[in-house]
Image 1 (cartoon, rainbow, N blue to C red):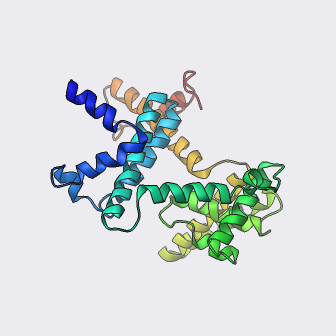
Image 2 (image 1 turned 180 degrees about the vertical axis):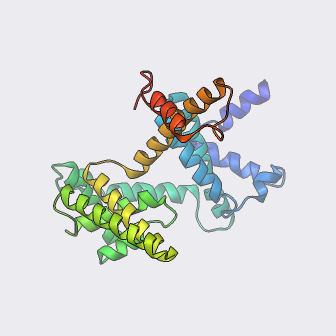
Image 3 (image 1 turned 45 degrees about the vertical axis):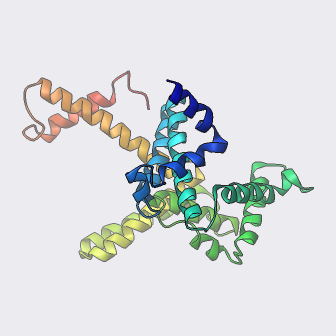
Length: 271
């Protein structure tokens, strides 16, 4: 226990966490940790970020604390690797972050004023564009990471277009566009052109994202919510089928629909 306590005193605080990673990456450290690179850790970073989101969805503080620690672990890992290669340190990361926060909040740390959330966001974007040398809205769009989930990326692209006035006036215009894109998708299906079907399908999804944006709904969250809802209802249907001693493969669609409606109308299901 004494050894554990000494490690707790020495390492278990923010300022000394990187020292812990230097030990892990040293010759006397862990073979797995030594073998990791920026490239090998990419999937870990993405996975940990999504686990933080799941903890937030669950409203579980203990889990959120743990998952935030796991995400911080990835930041420490990448910073330590960069330090070993003489490129930058964790201190440089923190310094850059502090400077960015101050620079992009002139309405807090300077004399400018932001009277609303919209004005604050516009101030942030203006400073960000100057910082990134984005002279056009297109340049700003191109800087949106291509590895973002597609719905999230589409939403961000549309929001940047809106900032320069390229947007529908109101949501009924978007609804008309959705009907138009659906018609074009069905026409492409009739033609039997796979590339055209893919293109028109993308146009339809892009328009639906646009409509949700008008309703202040995050498309990624909305689709994940529906996917989870589908799984819950499907589980109830499958349980009912098994209780009847049969299988979904042999049961008719009309009967499955009946069980689906019963699962949908369960009083204890919250949507």
